[in-house]
Image 1 (cartoon, rainbow, N blue to C red):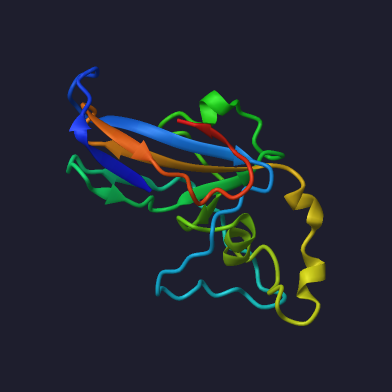
Image 2: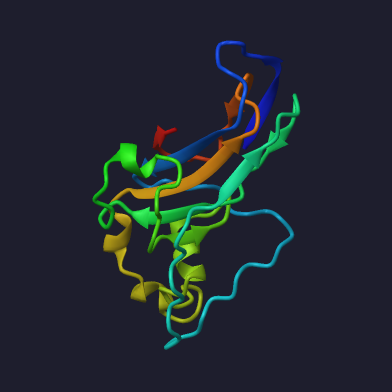
Length: 169
């Protein structure tokens, strides 16, 4: 969640700025979605996984003082599969080709289930078919932000991060 503070900061020039947010953490969990939207369907056994997303979502942060802007979502990928540096991954417009889409309050497992990588863990012994090795390394969460007014202060609220994370902005 991004909150635009009411007091402007006059240390930076006025204008639009693209910013990227990248988060990597061991066991990085974000709280489950509580919106009224239906959960994405999880394919049944034998269904082919969906192709991962090719870009991280972009959230536009308006210049309205006191406003709150939730992130529109993330692209997620295992650090075991990303060889780029944190500086590269957190750069605006980083090509997140092969990354998986995740909701703004999604866990890694929820994103991978929605992408069809694993069978329904709540059906029979489906949970045993999910490889635990995928979750022993940190995962990247990344999203692009566009600030419409860089003279105003913006507060980034990461209260959904439960455990530990390294934040790159």
